[in-house]
Structures are given as C-alpha cells and as structure tokens.
Image 1: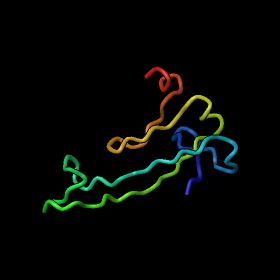
Image 2: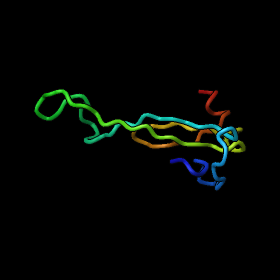
Image 3: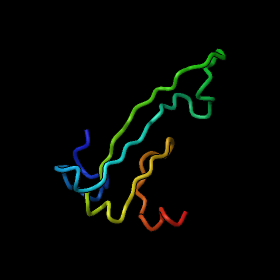
Image 4: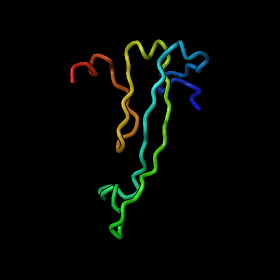
Length: 86
C-alpha cells in the first residue's frame, strides 16, 4: 500500500490521489540474472513471477519529477526536464 511520496527527500503522506500522480509498474522476478528468463535449467518453458507495484509522487514533487522503474536498477527519480531530453 502506498502511504507516502516516493521521493525519499519528501515525507508528504498520501491523503488524496488527486494531489499528485500515481504510478504503476509491472515487476518481474529475476531469479538468475543473466539467464534466459523464459527457459528453465532443464530446457522447459517457465513462468516468470510478476507483481504490480504502485508508487505516488505528491503534487509538489510531481510538478518537477517523474518515476522510472528498471528491472535491475529499481525505482529512479527523474527530473522532468531530463525525461523529455532523451
């Protein structure tokens, strides 16, 4: 459950979804990094474990930051101006 702003420098509690921005990321488990995630050791297809994670940025933080999730690096705060230059 989301309870605070995802920005670690901000401690704003979540009270209303209308104040800020909610993010949803699908997270797949990486059991063995570097291995083919679709093939098990014996060559059979395997299912990857998936979860949906939710994060929230408060109104003030969402006005100049966005969130990006990388399977290996985790959650990243990205300044909005940098998000549009790539």
